[in-house]
Amino acid sequence: MKEFNLPLFMKVKPDALKELKDNLDLYFPDVIGKRILILTTDGLLQMLEKKVTLMLSQLKDYEVVTVESSSYDYAVSIAKKISMEGVRMIIGFGGGTALDTAKYAAFVANVPYIAIPTALSNDGVCSPVSVLFSKGNRTHSFTSKTPDGLLIDTDIVLKSPRLLQEAGVGDVISNYTALYDWELDCKYNHGQPNDFAYMLSERAVNALLYSNIKSFTSPEGVKMLAQSLVLGGLAMQIAGSSRPCSGSDHLFCHALDELFDHGLPHGIVVGIGTIGAAWLQKRDYRMLLEFLKEYGIDINPKHRGITEVMFVRAWLFAREVRKERYTVLNNMEMMPKRMREDMFKELYALMCRI
Ligand SMILES: [Zn+2]
Image (cartoon, protein in one colour):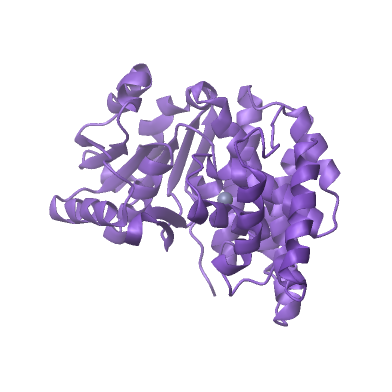
C-alpha cells in the first residue's frame, strides 16, 4: 500500500504563531531543546519584527539563516549544514524563496519541516515539490516533501501584498481546467485519474468558487484560500504528479516564463492561462470571470503588461514545454499554425474586453 505524508498539524487563525511551541512539544517531542534552523528572507525579519520575536521566544537552540537565493545548489548547501551541525528540524518562514529552499533542504537532510508562510500566493505551500533555480538560471520542479506541520498566521498573511493573494486564487482556479486536461490525458493514454486526488483538487476549487465569503481580506477568507491551496498540494502528493492542479493553464505560464521576463507572480499568469484553457476546452469560462470580478481580481492580460505578441507566442509555445503531457492543446495539433495564431489573437481580444 502506498503511504502518504500528511502534515501532523495545520493551524490557520489570527496569532497562530503563538501556538508554535505547543505544537512542536506535542508532535515532535524528540526535537525539544534540540537545534532548529529557521530559513527566511531578508527584509521579513524587520517587517514582521513583533511576530519574529514571538516565534523565536518559543524556541531554545536555534539559528536564523537568511536565504541568499532559491537555487538548487544553495538548498543542498543548507541540507549539508543540517547534517554536519546536527540540526534536528527546519522551519521555513516567508514566501516561496524561503519555503521551497527549506522544504528541499529538509527533504535531502531527512529532518522534519515546518512551514510558516507569510503569503498565500501558490499551492507550493503544501505540495511535495520545490521550485528552485538550476541550470541556466531557469526554475525547475524538484521532488521534495510536504510540510510536517503548517502554521498560517492570518494576521501576517493579511499584511502581505494583495497581489500575492490574488495569485493564490489564480493558482486554485487552474484546478478547474487542469482536471479536464488530466481526464483528456487519461482517455488518450487509456488510464484513469486517481479518484481521491481528483476529488481533493475538485473540492479545493469548488470551495473557493462557491463560497459565500467573496473576499480574502478577512481571517475567514484567508482560511478558505489556505485550505484550498493545501488541498491542492495534497492532491498532487496522492496523484504522484502535479496533474490534478496543472494543465494547459500552467503550460501557458511556463511558456511565458521561458520566453519573457514578465515579473508577474506565478498565480496571476496561471489565472490568465486558466481563462484561456477553459475557452479552448469550450467550457464555462464566464463563470470563472464572474467569480474573479466578485473578488476584484483583474486578469485582463493587457492590464497585467502582457502584449498580444507575448500572449500568442506563449500559447503557441505552451505545447512544447512539457511534451509528455496531453492537454487540450494537443487537440489543436492538426490545425495550421496560422489558424492557431488567429485563435489566440481572438482569445487575447476577448480577454482584453473583460
Ligand atoms: Zn501553480
